[in-house]
Length: 226
Ligand SMILES: NC(=O)c1ccc[n+]([C@@H]2O[C@H](COP(=O)([O-])OP(=O)(O)OC[C@H]3O[C@@H](n4cnc5c(N)ncnc54)[C@H](OP(=O)(O)O)[C@@H]3O)[C@@H](O)[C@H]2O)c1
Image (cartoon, rainbow, N blue to C red; front, top):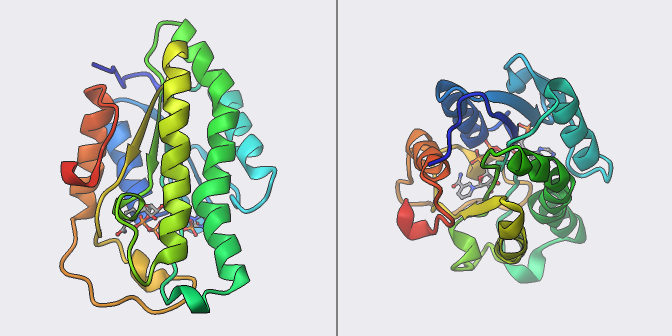
């Protein structure tokens, strides 16, 4: 069982609905949370780093700021992401770029930057972890969401492969793949219009399930776990 009390955890996308709820629940478990996001007004918390994952330097800057503030890093939760809707034949180059940049490339760069710090955490006897939120589309790519699904599947594949490498260093990676969740994300799509979804999960429940997986040392959170 992972002890969160005293752990320093970086939450990226902490200005979002799921990210802010995960951050709140981590603090309730005794973790020190460093929040990162684009929008300072929505970020909150004492410790925060404003950065846009679209820039190459953001991953290094975010991880360095979190580590420098506390001299250690024991966990990373990546809850940043954007969605776009519409047929594959219509998706623009700009939309494809933004989806892959935010949902896959930025998170992959962040993970890479965090590994040395998490390796130190493991060497100090703690149980470091990395959590991503790819989503159900990484398991079941959906019509009208081809580029979004592909960007999320890219991240999920990276995590699955890297988790096998990092196990030896004592770092646990956990990709979570919830289905539609009532965060309003669909209404903030960067392109296209969302179809009518059936009622989704409650954000607080999704965050709770992710927290339980962190504490219970779970290694994967498929859509069926939500
Ligand atoms: N809601 C769902 O149905 C669902 C289901 C499965 C998976 N997910 C995934 O869960 C994650 C959280 O989504 P949510 O539903 O909580 O949506 P949300 O409230 O819109 O949160 C999205 C977060 O991503 C951040 N973000 C977007 N572009 C960014 C960029 N270029 N650089 C840095 N941060 C950026 C936003 O920051 P700002 O607020 O500062 O712009 C915000 O913190 C996403 O990856 C999403 O794909 C959601």
